[in-house]
Length: 349
Image (tube, rainbow, N blue to C red; front, top):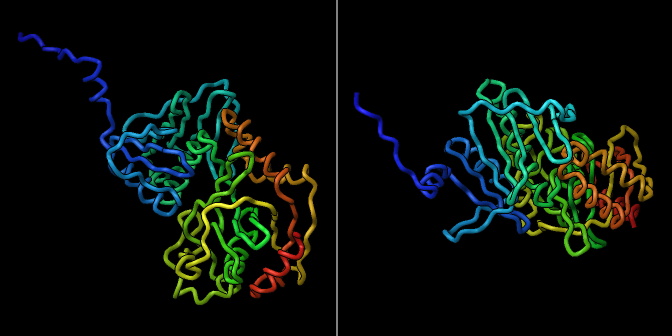
């Protein structure tokens, strides 16, 4: 019988064989994120979703050391979490398991695991079940993996619209249905600058907390398109959102070409809730109340324990930097852009 020959591979050769077949480098807020995979289709998923965010591909051949790496796989069985990790049910679906040094998120058969090191390493297993491969599930998985990576770079997501008036930056914070997109669209129509209608990144820089635009498009329901005062749905809508099929997207730069700004220093935080009342009401919050509202809107500051302290530090600095208000948005704020702009500016000075 002929003896099998085992190749004599050097360490360098082994490293070469382990290199990913696909590797893309992106930058956001001065951080570099590497997306690596042996599967071109998985890499293409990130490319597709990143085109909808203010995350920019890095061109050229100059080697840059990433601040964080994301590795994607669909072939191997995902790991099992340690039994001693604390677990949390996540509102959008899935379970997060974590302690001071570990992070493990699973939903159906898909897993996101964060490892330490320099640079930090995010492993993503994409499940093969129909539930895992459904469009909305893939979008949530990519968002979850990306935000897990960005939190390890000091960038923290916030579900908020960002606008800038002559007095400074204003964030309109709240869950879906709280009027963020409609108000941001109306305020842009009234001449204010805008960042995003829904998704922002917070980070500390030179003792100031800054907010940075993340999502490129605005999304409104058919009903709120008419309330925004910017035109007909048919002329502006592109496609439905994977997260929310009841909303349609439009490119704000096609409507407000000169009003986009990528970064602002927030000076006002509006925690919005839509009511059926005819008149809106605004109540000023204390710094402690503002911090409590920020924590409520940023659950990953508690779920993701390895990044929790840095996350909470940024939220605390933001609560000191900006004035907080509760906005009970009545019907008077919707459909009249000039009134909305005048009301919000006068109530928050």
